[in-house]
Amino acid sequence: MNTLFVTGHRKSGTTLLTSLFDGHNEFAVYPTDLSLMYAYFPYYNNNNYSFERKKNRIKKILRKSLKVNLSYRVEQKNLKTNIFISKVLSKLNHKNINNIKKIINILKNEFIKFYKLENRKYFTIKETSSDIFFNNIFKKKDNIKFIHLIRDPRDNYASLKSGIKKHYSKLGEDNLILLASMLNRAKLDFKFIDLNKKIYGDQNYLIIKYEDLIKKTDKCMKKISKFLKVKYSNKMIFSSIFNVKTKSNTFTKNRTTKINSKSLERWKNELSLKEKSILNFFFKNELKKFYKIDTTKKFEYEHISDFYSLVNKRFFFNDSFR
View: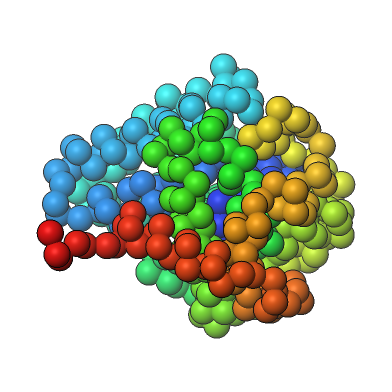
């Protein structure tokens, strides 16, 4: 069974796209973020930690990603995630615990067997911003396809901003950290598109716009079906987990099983003038290249300098005159 990786910056539609594959009988879909490619790799898979600590770390990641992150989207009573996790952990040993590719393959094989999803064409898994690490892990010969989602950075940040109180503040992120992180990670995500396409080829690396996925879901999924060489099904326009229709993972109260076009151009009403200036300035090239939008005159220099002062004071300034 081939592997299909779905990636892109957080809140760019990776959860939605992955759940659209769920009802199609050619896909075995891992129901939540992999989480291992930022919470385990590349920080724990080394000799600085004991085997038991690394194994416990993987256990903690899988338990939280499957039980906590899924809890608000689908009833888990019949998923038996604890048993599945135990089977994955039983396959870990001193030889494979440091190899993220081998760990992913163990997860893949155990998931397919445990949930009886054999004879599918693709094991489908998502991880945000994992595109930055692909070439460190996978080779072109590995039979892996990649779908990389992009989103207008202004809408992307507006979506993140809407979750500060309910979610990101609990992770220690405020507006400044969230925006600084967005500028760093999303810029890298955009830059790695050309790098990864050069490595894996257009036949293995597909770019999809979040906006197309939302506005033209049927057309977009037909394009993806052609890329993956699978027969298109109208089930691919409905979001589900283990064939159970699921609601969106938006931070607002308006969670729905339908694809919501209200998420488009929300930045116009939800961002401040300063936030718009900063995003227009830093993503000027990406907005022009991918969206044909010219933001050359759509920012104020004082907004950029103010932002720099705040970031520098918070993260980099070292007072050598004390």
